[in-house]
Length: 156
Image (cartoon, rainbow, N blue to C red; front, side, top):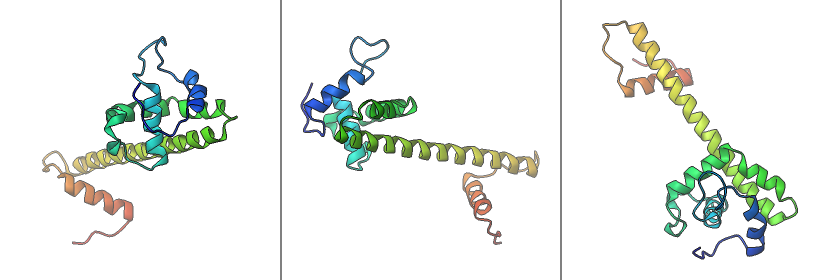
């Protein structure tokens, strides 16, 4: 394991390590370096960093981000926090990760809803215009969508 000046102390890592999935010997895939992954997630969560700005010493940022998303969906972060109530510092760190995961989930849900609504609106416009109408351009679709959301009257 490469050594990074991270947030986790060795005694904290000893408490976390047995609770993590992806260890060698676990069924399924195993993480190459769970401690490095935890340090990467903590770097993003505690330093308000961006995944794409993750230092290369943590490995590929997309790999860490995708694993973070999978663990967020599986509620791994909350379960870790519940199991480590005796260490206040770890609680704070894991709480920051839980908050980051909740924010990512909220943003992804909103993005998905917007995409779905834009598609539905586009289909409705096409249906209302009839089969002989020209297709609606993406910029027209989004400007009409904005008009609907803001309840402004169209100018024209």
